[in-house]
Amino acid sequence: MCGRFALTGTPDQTAAFLGLAELEAFPARYNIAPTQPVLMATAGAPRAPGSNLPDRQPMLVRWGLIPAWVKDTREFPLLFNARSEGAIEKASFKAGMRHRRALVPASGFYEWRQTGGKKGQPYWIRPRHGGLVAFAGLIETYAEPGGSEMDTGAILTVNANADIAHIHDRMPVVIDPRDFARWLDCRTLEPRDVTDLLRPARPDFFEAIPVSDLVNKVANTGPEIQERGVLQPEPDKVRRQKPGADDGQMTLF
Image 1 (tube, one colour):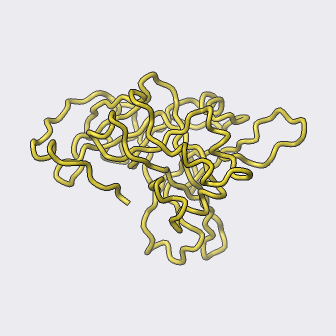
Image 2: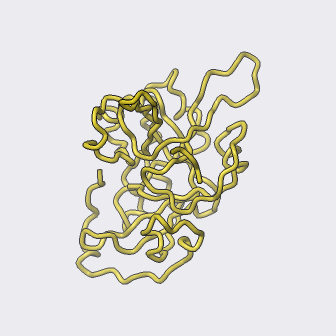
Image 3: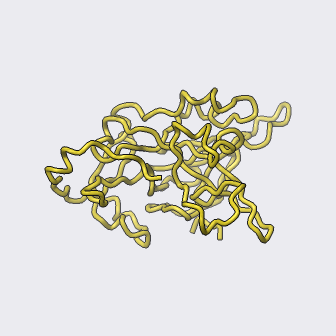
C-alpha cells in the first residue's frame, strides 16, 4: 500500500519530469497524507495542430477518491489506494481507469513493517539513484450536494517486489517515463491496453531506509523525518509470518 509519500523536488524539476509547460511555486513536502491535496498530471486537451506545447496538465487533487455515484461521503471509506489487479472491474475505480488516468510525482514513499498487526519500524523508500518517480494515479471528479465539484484521486498498488516485500506485501505502481504517454492516453487506449504497466518496480530500483517514528504524526513535516534511524529488532514470530492483505481547501501549503 502507499499511505504516506513525499515530493521534495522543485517545481521546475517536477514540471520537466512530468512534461508540463510549468508549475506554480510550491514548497517541499516531506509527509503527504490521505485527505491532503496532491499534485497529479493528466493528458489534458488534445494539442492544436502544429503546436509544440506539452498537452499534459497539472491538477490539484484531494488524496482519497470519491466515485461520482456516492450519495453520502460520511458513510464511504477513504480510498487513497486502489488495488491494480481489480481496478478495471471495480465500481469505485473503473471510471477513473477508463477516463482519467494520472501520474503522481513523488520523491519516494513511506512504509511500515507490520508487527503483530500494528505499525512497527517505519522506512523511507526512495529511488536508489535519486530523482523523482511517478506513481500510477486515478482521478474522479465528485459533485457535492451543494453543487460544487471536487477532484479526488487514488494511487494504484501492486504486489511488492523483493526489495519491499520484507516490509510490506504491497507497493505503489511506478510508471516509467517512457510509458507516461501510454498511461495517460485515455482517448485511444482502453484500460486493457495499459494493464501491462501495472507491475512492481524492477529489482534494486528502490532502497529502504529505516527512519524514526516522527513520520507517524502528520504534523511532522520537516526533512528530519527522512533521517536514518535506529533499526528496531524484528520479533521472531513476525519474521515467520507471510505478508498479509492490502488495506483497503485546495492548497499545497
